Length: 151
Image (cartoon, rainbow, N blue to C red; front, side, top):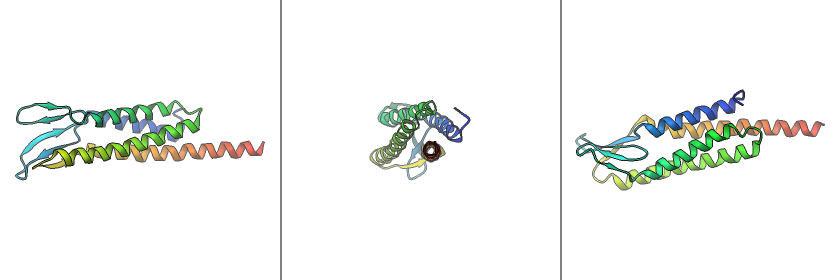
């Protein structure tokens, strides 16, 4: 199960997804550089009042689903076609995650600017790792099909 390189890619992608769920994605700052709010996947925390706004809950939900599917894909090694479809869905979900993140930041920033943290790049790394795992699974599938033709 973890002996194949694509399983390692999926495991690292899962770990990065969990890390991204728990760390801030960035901060909102005024033009003078004053820190106004922190953006997490589940909430926005204002620094002045300490209030939490759960407006970006969809970011959290999409990332939880994508991370869970990536983790489950590790155990679908006996059904390579289903594993590839699951990874394709994860990649689409993570692209949608970034689309909603851009939409949310543009709609909620107002007079402030958004400064992303390095954590915001982790879902992109997950996309790359999922793609590499997809390619490895596809190579395995093609190898099995070629060996079936020889019999």
